[in-house]
Length: 185
Image: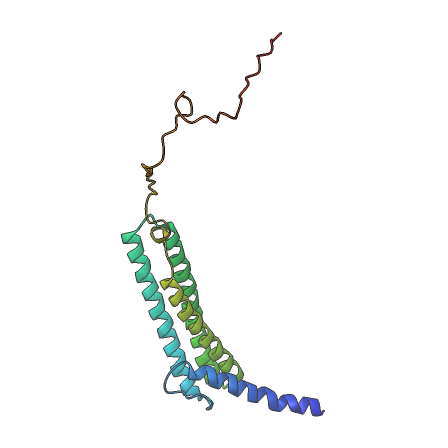
């Protein structure tokens, strides 16, 4: 019985800590360590959806620029398309979760509202990370700056050697004997 009462105290305390710190990251009106009111959750949820939409618009703009300026750069285009697709999935999910948050609050279901709020915060953070990763998408032009050109310079102070001719240096101490050819039957 003592173990069960411990959980009844620990779980709400942990939830308050997690939701309080998650809410602190969503906007200036929610302070860390304070209880998050339903109105604060709705406000922060709407802000999260707006931030994810902004990230999607920015990555979409980067993708459009890449298509115009370097349409053959498949590496960069693929990278940006991947980041945009992931952000758009987060955007769609965040809109559904914001609506679910509002519905849960209207029904008085605090557990579901807190869950949806946490998920919205996680989606916003992941979208911000994907937005930053989209800036890191580099293409072939950086990895391969152009055609490789090779130039050869011969030092004029080196003596010329003709390997097939009679001129050139031959070591007098080496005797070269060419074996006779064997008859072929």
